[in-house]
Length: 615
Image (cartoon, rainbow, N blue to C red; front, side, top):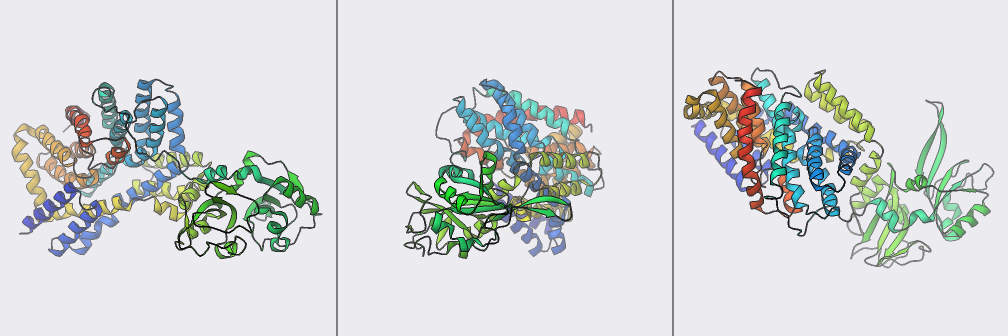
């Protein structure tokens, strides 16, 4: 009875995965609960997946990958190599695939495609070639890069953990690399051959995220803030010293605003001067040798400098960058239709006191107002330029009654914090890979070290930033699917499935069983995510290998390879889904290009897997 219930639950789960009507993580949780409700799994067995080291490792890899993206390390490497291609389309095509395969060896395939997609579209447009010729190959090669290293795909980690759980040696960091190299070369050759025959080339409307984005730097440019920014030094003889800014009434008297204060103080621990950055506010007290970043008309600033005995310094491009830093940023804020600020003047709304943010400018239907703002009445549709700490801007974004913050302050804050940290991200990556290659620690510990270092070194802004980059849908999916193997094991379902494969193909020996496992895995993987596919078929493949007295690693690697080759449909693979809309593809484009590739890869894999990993 339990065996029948197990297969019923498994069948319904597969059907729900295939129809794609319900999110994958919810499907996995429903299956998990079903096994507990019918008494096949205990609560402890059902929840064991959430403490599995593979799940922890996958979560930490999301953080590491986010650090590489956030610092721009991956993007820098990609853009540099793409420049080498010049305007040669074939060279560009091959270089692109090599770059993606290299980057994807250390990042998730989804992250790799998300990183490269806007770069690829812009380059394709610049050489007047349809991006649709590049994006589908981008997805395919990103999937193949999952076979380059142990950490490149969750399927590798799952099959490795399956071996460990059953008393066998785990896969090494580069154990699967020979297969990955051969698979990648094969896919590149195939795509080069068919790119002008099977790949679509319509210059149709392409939907991407590569268009206009309201970044802080774009805002600064739109408002011409750099042209109105001045750096002023406060000498010890100035009459402004020890006075709060509120007493000076600078906006009313001079129509100028002090935006930031840079203060040089002695660090007692290091016995050396350290520069502190402070956002200027009404209670800010001016100290000797402070550097003030002042916004306003040049004549007004010179009047202020002369009256208080200050020194004006030449502003540089680097100085202008102070408007956006790790701590401080700018954002545009729109007034809502029901906003209580409508009809009020800037001087009366108490914006600084209420939100701890400075108003630097107003955008009224494309006209940027930076002078005499205090008496301006705010109208519906106005955009207000504000400046302050990223945390305060993020808090303001949660205010939905009066204002709406344009853009993603958390994302921009993270990018600002990670600026210049690409070398550190590279060092962290190399350290993590080294710890895994030389097996200094278990793989999960090495990856956790890498994730923590990405935060400590500032490649990611803080823990919230790190958590925000974890794809919890994937984490829950893997964790909830892992106990399915336990259910199959307990009820004898795993033995039944592996026995069925052996009875059907066993007369052809271990090779015939390998073909059967590969084919059933790859067919299933066209409709279900690679992680779910690996979780289901890795234990079955292992059991079949044991019954045949064959090398379990041979069958495990076959499952890892087949599970990641979702070429024929856009359903199961997130990378295919990403390029589906961006490239303007149709379902049949995947069938036309993917099915022949599946056949080619089947032939190649059935030759090289037993050759490199004998039975």
